[in-house]
Amino acid sequence: MFFDRLRERTDAVDSIVCVGLDPDPDRLPDHLRDHELPRWAFNRRIIDATHEHAAAYKPNAAFYEDPDGWRALTETIAYAHGKNVPVVLDAKRADIGNTARQYAGLLDRADAITANPYMGRDSLEPFLSRTDKGVFLLCRTSNTGGADLQSLELASGETVYERVADLAGEWNEHGNVGLVVGATAPEELEQVRERVPELPFLVPGVGAQGGDAEAAVEFGLADGIGLVNSSRGIIFAGDGEQFADAAGSAAKQLKRRLNRFR
Image (cartoon, rainbow, N blue to C red; front, side, top):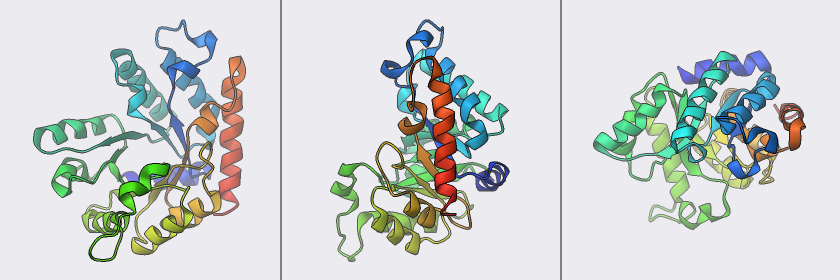
C-alpha cells in the first residue's frame, strides 16, 4: 500500500516534505544546458541534495511531455526510487474507458498520481483499482482561480469542494485515496479535514505561493501521514553552479519549519 510506504519513509527521515520536481527549461542553470538531458541532469542533482529531507518527490508531468522529457522523467523516477523515496506523479488525469486505462498506466512508473474527479467515479476507476498505488484527488486547489468552481454552493448547501471530499471518502474502499488541498486557504483546509478525518492530504502552496505552514501540518495529516509540497521554493532556491546546495538547504529548512507543528 502506498500510504504504508509513505509512513515508513516519513518515519525514516522525520519529514513530510514533498519536493516538486518541475524543471522549467527556461530556469535551468546554464552549465547544464549542454547536457544530453538537461532536465534529468538538474533533477539528479536536486535529488542528491534533498533526498535526506524528502518524504516524496512530485514531478509535474507538464514539464516532461516531449520525447526527451519522458526520458528524463523515467530516469528521475528510477533515481528517486534508488534513494528509497516514493514518487507522486502530478498529472491531474482522468477520462473514461480506454483513455482512462491508458492514463492509469502512468502508475506503472510512479507510486501515486494526482487525478481530477470532475468526470465522476467511472473516470477514476482505473486509478482507484490500483490498490497498491496512491490517488490524490483534486479538492480545493491552491491557485487563486480555484474558487471559481470549487467554492460554488450546491443545492444541498455544501460547496463543490466539500462534495468532492465526501465522495473521496466514499471511494476510499482500498485505503489508497488522498486529497489535494492547498495551504493558501487554511480555513477551507480545516473544513475539508473535518469532513474526511481519515484521508491524507497532499498540500501544495507552501513556499513560493506563501501558504500557511502551520495549517498545512495541523490539517494536512491523517494519523501522521500526509505531504506538504514545495516546488519552486526548493528547486530554484539558488542558481548557478551552487543551485543544488541551495535546494538542499531549502528542503532542510522547510522540514524543520514543518516539524515544529507536528
